[in-house]
Image (cartoon, rainbow, N blue to C red; front, side):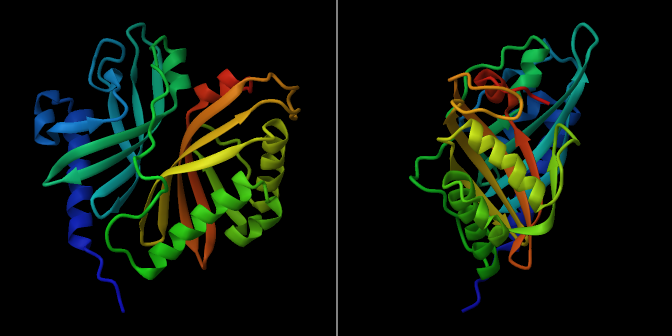
Length: 281
């Protein structure tokens, strides 16, 4: 049986979120916030820096990638502006919105808090972005291909990252897949570089575990919020163990082609990595 995808709902929700960004975060008409957010909206990651001009006057955001999946929209955004002292700001975040009746009912975020801290802004405590459900699930109708793509990504986090089975990486990634980090261009492409990078990470964090907190899928794209936990008890290419714990959140977007990952983008909370004792880019 063929699953019918509610393309109209996805399109409307994508347009709503794009209008939200244009109105609130580009034109800074913050008095219209009530048009987009329900009064009982559940905010999992309060962030005053978005709507206050105290730290970053004339702050604006541009959407880099957006995936609309039924009642959920997940995106990457780049925030630019200047501090009160005149320093330039460039910050990457990932945002997840759950929409209901034409407004935002729930919101989660992953921010590169390292950038906020560098500009003297209190990034706040790490927020719990995990949903109430014990395991990540797709919500609403999806095509067989979308479900297969989501299962592929979830399998990679389970087998490669949590079980440390780097020998299974080619089951999930194309040999020449491309990797885009939103903060730095110094991330190599290809499966061999991927294996070398994560071999170093697993050596540093022998107890490294990943938990996928949210997953959305539309067409050939899958996006996830992920929590990475471990302890820096091993050696790595830049130094020795610190014994510090890691609890880092990322958002990752994958483009699936012929049943494997062909391209990957990521937003990383580098503050958590630095607090664990590793250098940040």
